[in-house]
Image 1 (cartoon, rainbow, N blue to C red):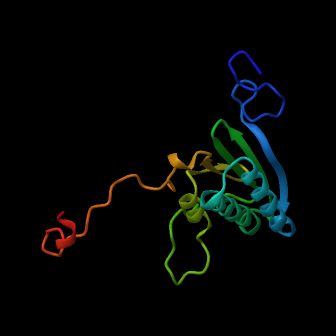
Image 2 (spheres, one colour):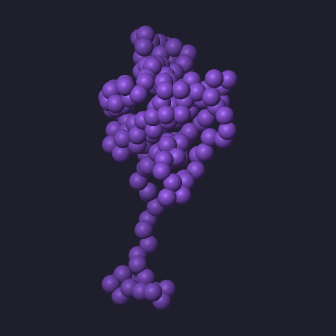
Image 3 (cartoon, rainbow, N blue to C red):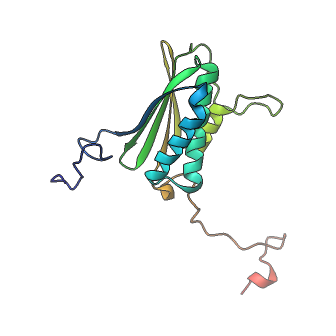
Length: 173
């Protein structure tokens, strides 16, 4: 352990100078998408992102991976890192980055086109970066779900009213 109380073992997520520790780095193709999703799920669970928040993060990354295969040249690279209490996952493809990257929900009668929107909705944030030969999509998740968008609300629930702006007879005390 270092003088500042941070573990100093190589590969520990918080060792060193605050640089994010690599948890998973893997190239992928259409043939390896399912195996990558299972491996990602195991790593995400092992670092403590569990339950619905963990499932949502894995689903969001899976959407980015399948987008890379379908629209980004048929292959890509996934890099999952931990930086303090956050998971950061970058999915890089090798396709042409022409046109706009829609991060909106398409009409209900349109097939497909929801991957980026889902990734944005299911994580703490989505960042898209165009490169000369491809796109890098980055999603993040907090390892402390009580601070994230999936946290249970701490707001009190108002008692029901009777439709006339008054509390119901049972709720008046």
